[in-house]
Length: 468
Image (tube, rainbow, N blue to C red; front, side):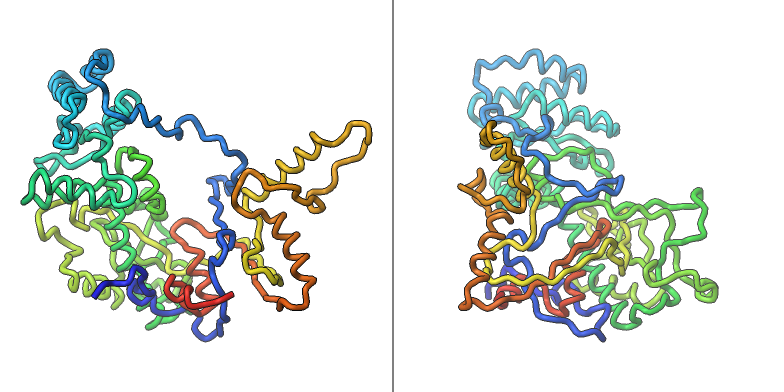
């Protein structure tokens, strides 16, 4: 039987609410594209907003002609000479051979080039940048060397890199076509950033089940013995910093960055400890200090029954959280350092307001694009204002669009006009919306915060059953 493309909350371990005693209310999420607006927060606490459509120079993608295979008479001698100084004669000869094969039109049957082992992360980053700048038709990533210990850089033809929709499947099939029985190598053909996303997803899957069990069994009113908490007493020199994964070289194709844009390091933990009876007597910790681990070699497990959830779930899936059962280091969860997430995070800067509307397609909130469009409209009106009249520019809220802006998306300005005209009709009933605004730290999710208010599933399948 074919599996539905949409999973339920129960299937991913989200099975309870932190405030189950409070009633919820019916509401539809993300009916319009502007119903869910997310702005990043900079390190200094300022909200990052879109103010220009211009791309930074380093983010501009290579032109398609630069990504194409080189012609047979293309001269790469200067770039190869520089590469020889960077990586040595042996790697230079191998790279020259790869380029010649690509130029001859044999790129469909080429095996990736594995450069010599390189233990220097800074040097690997320099090599990745060299390829970006000099050989745009080739892509690179970092892989484990055949000795299982060191790291090497893998060089592939851009068309075989496996980015974009269906990229992982395409990479596997290309590898299997070359080596039909080498399934391990086929898995390694998937870009490393995407492979890491699979592991991060499984960590979150286990975390969800553990968090649900902790809340269902013990509630959120207090810390219990065996909980993991951020220690408030450890000195900095005693701290243990734990990340979620082995650091990479800071390289990735643009398509890989898109795939993995949500894969961010969890909060760096200065010190995590298991709560004991003495901590409970002191009463210095609250439920907001409680964390649960994303499993890995350096992450602690709780000292109570919650830890059993991790091991039981993993065992059902044939996975060990404490040892590498299959001998392939990079496909073992024990190769991850691990990390932690708070079980409960209180939103800050929380604001809300009730709004009425009649048009289901009208935008109820301004996006950064709306604001930029209004500013552009105001500038255009100033430019077109006759100089002899001496009249001042009207306020933005009084502007009316005379024609479409350079975007196919509706702006809040048109929405306001539509609401006013439709609202005057007696045939359309008025509907109620609640507008929420709040700030969350990384590894906290707005959808889960809204779920606590609604007491309804946020899954796509359930949301599709609702009407505005």
